[in-house]
Length: 374
Image (cartoon, rainbow, N blue to C red; front, top):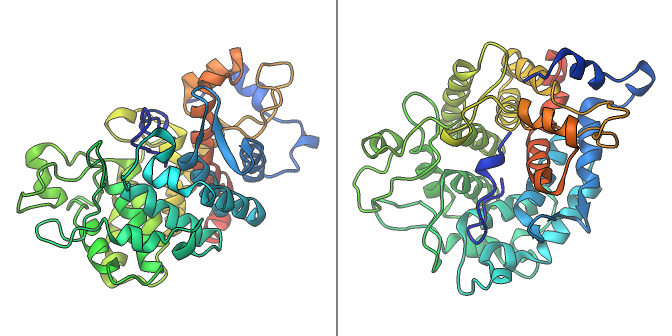
């Protein structure tokens, strides 16, 4: 989940449809080309997008650390790519200050809480020390962004001249990272995160705007229109809560409730839409939901979501502009159609990479048996 405040926010416009019958036919690989599993096809494509362990945005000429981390998480979930995950961890560690403070963009003296939490989880997944990640104690740094006073006790807060853009996505990474680092701030951070779950079961994306409001909960935020249902925020929060090694009863209850909401939110064809800006069915949102559902053994729903997403994976398109892009996953129907006509261009590359990074794990959930092993 890449959401760096110093850049034009690319994350929400490209979060994770079937084309015509002719197009679908061109996507089907011949029998001799089907030896590699769908998830490993996507993993191979993702690995090829890396340059020195990082995803470089060719359109705007910058290393996208957030998307690089998403790629590491996707490869880790797929399995069998420890070397590449470690390579990404090492590459991000070498530039960690640029990511969590924005130094590369002239943003000095700032600390972004969400990216810091995300970097901690990367360090843990890549088997590196989060208290000395590229020479930075990420745990101590993140602890310094946690509010210690009511009514926002436990909430992460950006320290920046650009304002505070911290949200529930970052809070979920902070809760997971600090919990697994056994930080004394972990309980407060997790408690505040759980308060961002509405009674209906979903997690909202944004915190209550007024930090002085007595009620900072998701249900309380409905009065200020900040608590709209968000599939992506819900799925990612579930994934991060599932990633906490030692779960409290409250965390387990929250996971169960959120997954129940995801099952109800799933469309009949297995797909999911995201939040307000990504409401239409897309592979990014569907992939994240499948990932979360599989972690809770909601296999019927997870397999249906995975099956829908596979329709947008490039498998075999000989003689088309997508030749050579096996494993890439289109964001939605329009993206697939455009790709079939023009290929993956610099201007569309970012969307394909984001969709694939978060939908790829779902490619390994095509049967109930594979779901139960996830």
